[in-house]
Length: 143
Length: 143
Length: 143
Image 1 (tube, chains in turn orange, purple, green):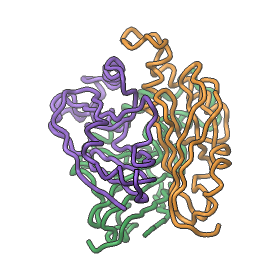
Image 2 (tube, rainbow over the protein chains, first blue to last red):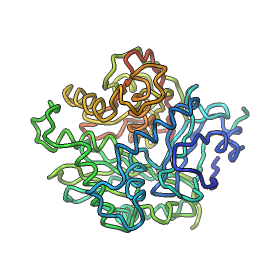
Image 3 (cartoon, each protein chain N blue to C red):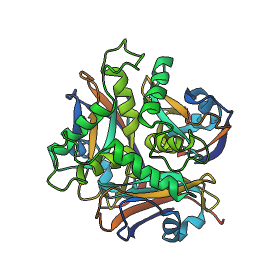
């Protein structure tokens, strides 16, 4: 069985945001997959998806801090500056974290570790709404 | 339905190269998949695949600049130097970007965002030709 | 056909470890898949999976060195420090490399490049045992 659906995320502040619950709410069909995979692609080049610690807001803030110093705005080596100082660093950050997650489904649930959650990483100051195309497939079966 | 095929890319200069058209030309069967996934694995450890901005050559040049300063050649901490100054940094860059892309197919087409394109990232000075193993699967159906 | 199984890895020292053989030994069913995919998810947020050079221990040591200087312990900007100096850098390193690998299967074997091997990347000083959930699917067929 296959499910494919675009999930639209409202505009968020620049930073790292936990969106596991939002993703699951948009995909009730996962409950009917006994073994399978959920694939998520964020269809943008200045935002990304990651899987990391799901409890501490400090962790998500430290992610933002680290990425901001590792891929600095206003560095003299950037040539693609027409779309704003935050644009080119956003492309690099997004590529480092990646645009997609591929996650296992077991007995109708995402089979993540206890501390793993899905991050939507917004790398622009005003990125606007973001679309994630979700595709799930696997064997049907009751939870 | 499953399709699996090796795509051979001619040697390219060190840098970030947009190869979306080349990938699609090699995989005409994608047009017959109504919903599915395309997986690409570059079978090398000093080149990588990424998904990023598909319009501006400046963006691709800035990617090269950032990675060169973040993973510098000739740094005193490298011990694996026998294969050339560009070798060990190439392994790190390749791991940061990753060797694989997993991309959704919808109605016979890659379902990418408007600005997303596939990059072949060549991290060596003379990397030679590169092989990408493409695997696609999904439900058959007319476009 | 689908196979899904948790693979438990004994505690390892902090660093980058080649685990291709261990993964394959745990998944004899791969030999019966003519074309398919193996997905691996490490169910932790301070360890990661990568695909890189499978021959030189120096390469794996240089990975550790680069990541340690790029994501330094004790940096003044970290705020999530309660779980130890190695904790927050481990989350960032893990996100940069990623928690999952998606690998093609061809004729009953992982279709990796000659020099590619699976790394388990342990980013904590004492990470303990690690669980990788393996999910494989594809068309059945003799090797």
